[in-house]
Amino acid sequence: MDKLSRRDFLMTASAATLAAAASPSFAAPARQRVFVASGTPTGILAYDWDSAKGELSPAGVAAKIDTVDWITFSPGREYLYAACEVDSFNGKPTGEVASFSVKSGALHPLSTQNSAAKGTCHVGLDHTGRVLLSADYGGGGAASFLVTDGKLSSAVWTEHYTAHGPNKDRQESAHAHFCSFSPDNRFAYINDLGGDMIHIYRLDADNAHLVAAGAYHGQPGSGPRTLHFHPNGHTAYCMYELVSVVEVLEWNKADGSFSLQARFHLLPEGYHGPTRGCDTVITRDGRFVYFANRDNNFLYSFKADPKTGALTPMKRSNCGGKIPRNFTLDPTERWMLVANQDSNLLSVFARNTETGELANEGKSFAAATPMCILFL
Picture 1 (cartoon, rainbow, N blue to C red):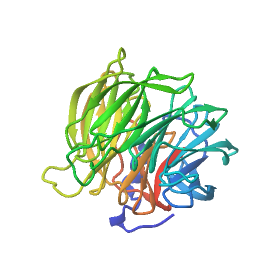
Picture 2 (picture 1 turned 60 degrees about the vertical axis):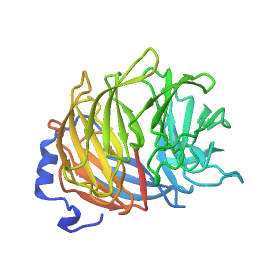
Picture 3 (picture 1 turned 90 degrees about the vertical axis):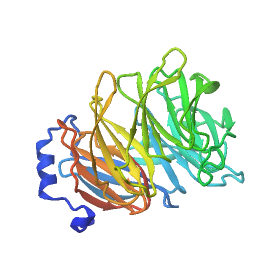
Picture 4 (picture 1 turned 180 degrees about the horizontal axis):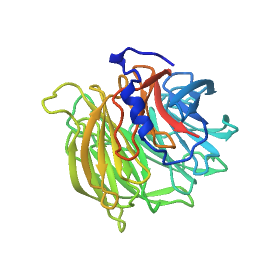
């Protein structure tokens, strides 16, 4: 564990008090394996998690694979899938998508495939575990793969987007960034940061085919990055990276479309520096939602109505470092873990499960360019 100065968010008495006050909402083993995607040639790192103390212990390299941006499990956690943001794979100008079997806390290579275009930054698995989607930031493409016993087919469907937005530095071309699926698994979504839209598709989970079914358009220059569904099954939250704005959307089950319900600006009043909205975490009971913001680097806590998904702002708090690329709650939901990409740190903050409050100071652990955190 790195012991940092107070300025760098050491665990203090106030944080310890908050942890003690938070009663566990989930019975987790005392020690648990955690995988961390690393944006280096090292690949996927392994850690052991102590939920009693809120501490991570390094456990070596779980899989040596280049520049992993995102990892996700199959529904039963028997398999892990990875997105590699490289510009060339197997002699072709694409990124890489890989799968691993998970046995006794270790990863074993199963398959690799070319994505649709270079710079694969995200993969998403449908609710059946049969369809994997990939999004390519660099090349503005997306692809689907059929999954059989954890092994990936070659791409079944591909798309290369052409829309671009008014931000000349970030939207010179399409930038597919995130894959997700509707609660009923009938629709798939690809967020296109460069084109200011969420592409909507009808999904055939039997064969991994997608058919275009429209798009939801964000404000020009907003850059939609991620899309997460609330446990209520009809609310979604879209994070807009380029303006640090979150939209609360109502999902239409009939055609997979969205309608705008509310919009929240994450930045402090008067702030005009660089900023990039990033990721979203929702508690299992749907009572709290958290957002991460980069460059000025903070987490923002919200209360949520479990039935409607409506948000009420609580407060901003420290993320523990620079560029919070991804963050997640541990299985007890008593701790929030943050992957601070540019600080090479995994930061841990205590959370009160009753009030949703995050400690403003926490512990930090070394990790090479952490990009995504996944609990086994």
